[in-house]
Image (cartoon, rainbow, N blue to C red; front, top):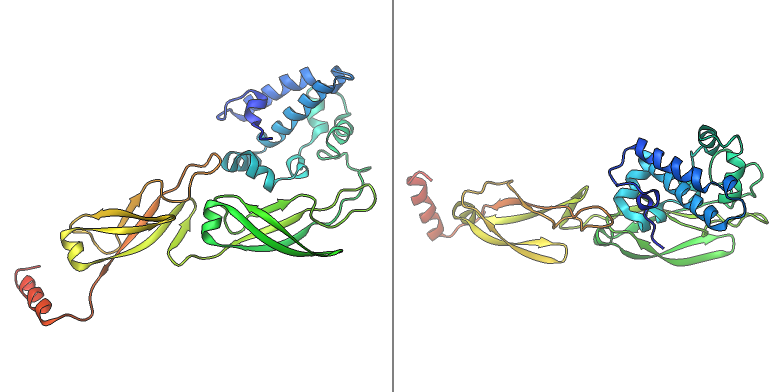
Length: 294
């Protein structure tokens, strides 16, 4: 089920860190298990607001959550990743709950945060695998079939590639890593994305670039051309007097919108096609234009 961390804490997406902390403190004081002994609903609510705060109080995790949306964020971050670096003991001491923050965290979240991990069963090893993704699948999203070796032999599975994926990003498939000793959780499968190059498009963040050529006459007089886009082509007018290397912006035709990220733009870079071979008639006309000062 999709979550909305901002709605869980009752804050706007533009909320400052101080506002987020203030709202979390108010809700934590209300729903803390020490104040609601035996209340399962209060405990579930406390877990929700604490997970929300663990993400929104960390600038990097918040940026990733804002960029990719809830579903893609949770494909990148496991529960352990979310609470890594989250010091429950110091936080709850600040809020007046004493020194039991880590112990309570270990009970509620399986040892996901703080320093209270001493008695948690060992976890299985993570597997790492590089996955080559075609350019357009990385841009628009899709599935890739991956094969990897485990202690039990070879395994295959389909992996969802989130739209807007880039080389260097890491996807996490929970529970597909190495087995754990008795009582522990298996590791995860970590997929390092390598996006293949494309013969037409290049990418800069959310924007795309494509090279298009026009005839010399079209550069002088203006023309119309078909510019390649991700799902076909778009007819575009070229203004008279266009120079070589000019960039024409097609708003919204870059990387499609995904999560909370707006669509990027497409830039068509103009190359003027100067012919190497001319007919006698063409030479005559050009010589006349030259004599006229063109």
